Length: 218
Ligand code: E4P
View 1 (cartoon, helix red, strand yellow):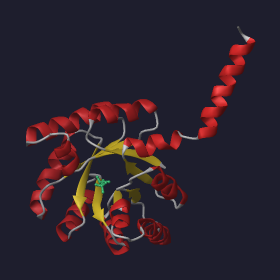
View 2: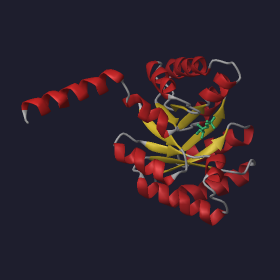
View 3: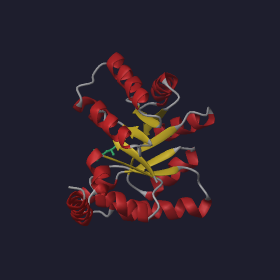
């Protein structure tokens, strides 16, 4: 399972990278705005900075909603760095754009996916990643994990190579549940990854080991 961090915060990206288990970064316009990154030039520079920190894929989202606009933006983004994945929304024009990018060898992440039908279309169009939004479905009393399970079944039925990127992960249990049902990738906050570290028996055990060592070596 690949681990992506879902943020545009450079300190958190560095911290996750230093842990040694990070495979990439996802961003979106809201995450960029949260960091105060506005204006085309600043946004472009920020993507470049992220690519310098991590070695894996970095999703950069287009703002246009028409085919021509998405192509123009996506080609500019892809040209920034070979780690850039063009993030395209799951709308009709987006599906056309994903097909266009796929034919040109430009990698894509189809975002805002909330149904199996949408995931099927994304895979047919040749998306590199499909992003079902787990947390946002849970927020409206709909089981987001069921959606990921269904997408896994459909993709496996036909051998689609599109990777299932479980997005909108909110906590550590989401990460574990996604791993159990075979999501290829998770993207979430740093806390959802670092939470995997925690177990009270580890802390108690380490404390005892160190205390016993101290006793025997005083
Ligand atoms: C996906 O790539 C999105 O950036 C993200 O996971 C959305 O998460 P949210 O629902 O917590 O905003």
